[in-house]
Length: 367
Image (cartoon, rainbow, N blue to C red; front, side):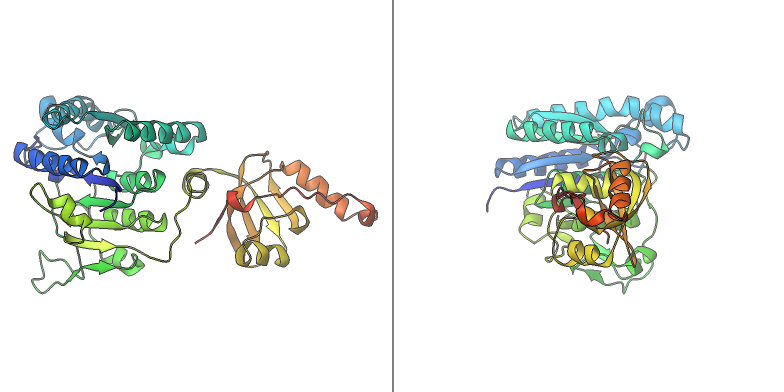
């Protein structure tokens, strides 16, 4: 089997007991499986929950805290406990972990986004095991990923993983709730996630985690859209992650063979950037960028809204609504000036610029 880059997401319920403490048997099982994956010469990135769940008992909370300050305080205690446990256990296999704490701001800010990619790439090149978690101690609602399921999906696309494995306490996706319906049928393979499946999915069933099956479906939908196949399920033993790679995992595989992966720059444009304005294009330009893979040229732009600058991301609208978004090579004022000149009486004699408004490599079509 060729060398692959694998993102493994382990949730709180898969790491801790009902009291919120790290379950050593579960923990050892995961570590042995991660080590086996590394020993098989694969690159591994771990997205690990468990910081809040591991820390709240030390603060005197009987259950997982519900307040923001309580969760952040628990994460401050639990994160050090969690990474120390990984360091101790992985050292038995001569594996060095590297902790990375992220917030939404690290993805939305282009410089930090690039720096995070460079850091993770360097760690993998050096043979280390990056362990990623959300920075719960400082994140506020507008800067959070919602849960580590979505974080794992964004990371898997970000570093161009060959597979995302989401480990949970349920062995895959079913057509109804297997806890209440003994006749529920499991999906062994899915080509994408439908809106109907999202509507049927429930919320979190764990007292120590934030993500339920719906969050896993949303994460899978995002990862597949980024060109990364997904596994959702469970397993035990040293070989469980290798079994998943071989197609023998106890769960559901989700992939869409027709999707082309987005490069890192286009992922940032599609998922993390904030738009600064709107550009309206004519039918000819719409057909060129949607159906012929062309860049957007100045001649196709007839209206501009907003006060954006060169390098900003804007939304592009055609005759039928939103077409997509892209990074512009002109400011709003420059485009307005070009439109004004084009509409003037001297338009036949004016110089027509050939620099693209949005290059096709800086363009992402709306879904």
